[in-house]
Length: 81
Ligand code: FES
Image 1: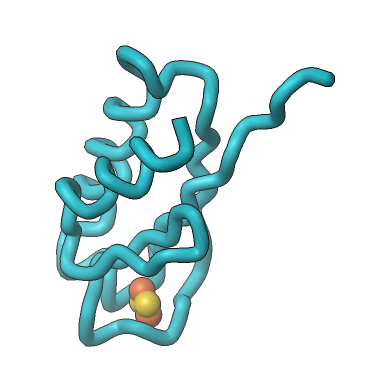
Image 2: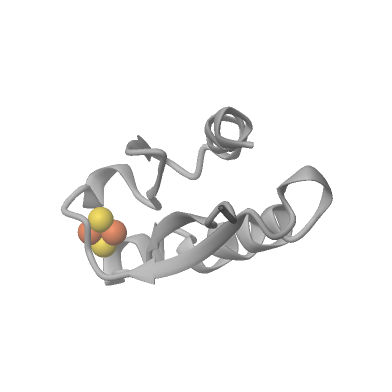
């Protein structure tokens, strides 16, 4: 059976947007389109996830990544690869 892609949710609500969510989403997109992650993840932009003070936020593998923590996000992606 073909393995399905995993989703990476990134908030693009107004508070996260003002804290750099667009840049964060761009970094995530660039990351999941390269190297070992290529073709295994899909970026989904969402509305507010109700964690505005920790923004910009993303969810991967049921884990919330706060404050644009790209290193934490990479470790979560590594668990899924
Ligand atoms: S705007 Fe991103 S969590 Fe609320």
